[in-house]
Length: 110
Image (tube, rainbow, N blue to C red; front, side):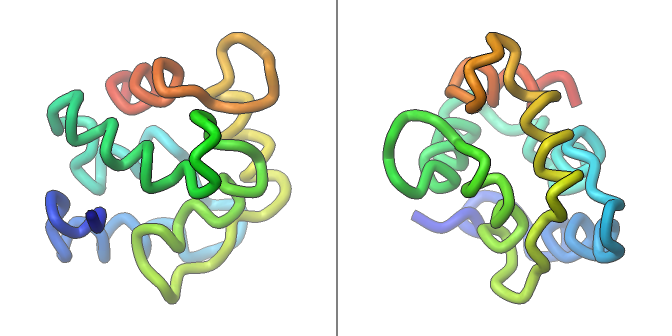
């Protein structure tokens, strides 16, 4: 299943355009702009599973770096600073990765 199945193309474009400049990505702003924070837990879980490309049950640093490309193929990778900040914001238990509960909480707090 593709992310575009339940997010509008215009919201995806707006969210990607809002963070085109390096070091401009903010997860909370992104989730709000893209409309993910208004989706059901099941839809948020589907997005989580897409982002968890290695199917480990977690979104790790390498997957976060390519986060934007899951929403738009031509999107830029996150910078090292953005990736670290994203991980720190989402990783509430300090294990170095973002699990489903952490991702859901991060999205819903947006």
